[in-house]
Length: 157
Length: 104
Image (tube, rainbow over all chains, first blue to last red; front, side, top):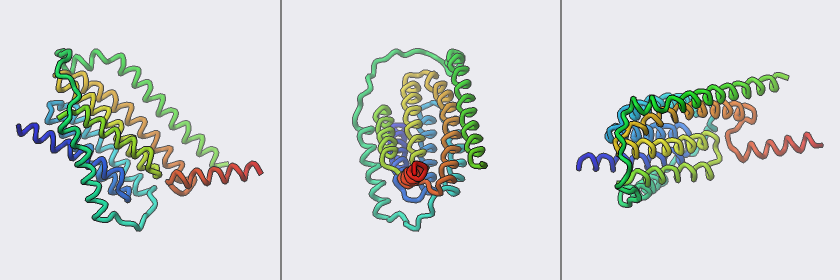
C-alpha cells in the first residue's frame, strides 16, 4: 500500500518536473527541473527493485546535468522575463492533470512470459549487442570530433 | 498504476516540447525526456516481470545516449557561437540572409 502510494507520488513528480523542464522561461531553472525528473526516475527504479538501473540513472543524470548547467549558463540568452507565479502554478496543475491517466488507467496485460533472467546473465547474453553499440558510440564520437575540427578549420580561413 | 501510460505521457510531453520550443537547449532537454521515457518503459516492464534484461538494456541505452548528448551539445555550442543566438527561428533567418547574399 505504502509502496503503491510512493510510486504514485514519484510518477506525479516525474510528470510535473518534466513539464517544468520544458516550459519554464529560464534555461537554468529548466535544467534544475530536469534534475528533478532524473532524480524521481532513479527513485522510481529503486522502489521498484531495479537497483542497478537506479544507480546508473542517477550517475548518468548527474553527468548530463553538470554539462547542461554549464552550457545553459554559457549559451542562454539572458532574458529579463521572470516566470510568473500564475504560470508556475498552471504548469504544476497541468503536470498533475497529465499524470492522472497513468494513475487510473491501465493498458498492460497481466499475463506475460515470466523468464527468470538475472542481471548478470542478461548482461552476458547481450554482450554481442554491447560490442556493436560500443562501436556505434566510438563512431558517433569520431563523427562529432570530425565536425568540430572541420568547423574550426573553416572558421580559421 | 500503469508505467506504460506514464512513459507514453512523458514521451508525449517530450515530443510536444520538441515541436514547440524554439531554443536549442530546450530542444535538447526534450530529446533527453524522450530518451528517459523509453528507458523507463524498458526498466519498469522488465523489473515488474522480475527480469534483469531491462536493466541491462538501460545500461546499453545510456552508453549510446551519452555519446549522442556529447555530440549534440558540441554542435549546439558551435551553432550558438557562429550565429550568436540559440533561437532556431533567428538562426534560420540568418542562414537565409547569408544564402541570398552568396547568390547575389
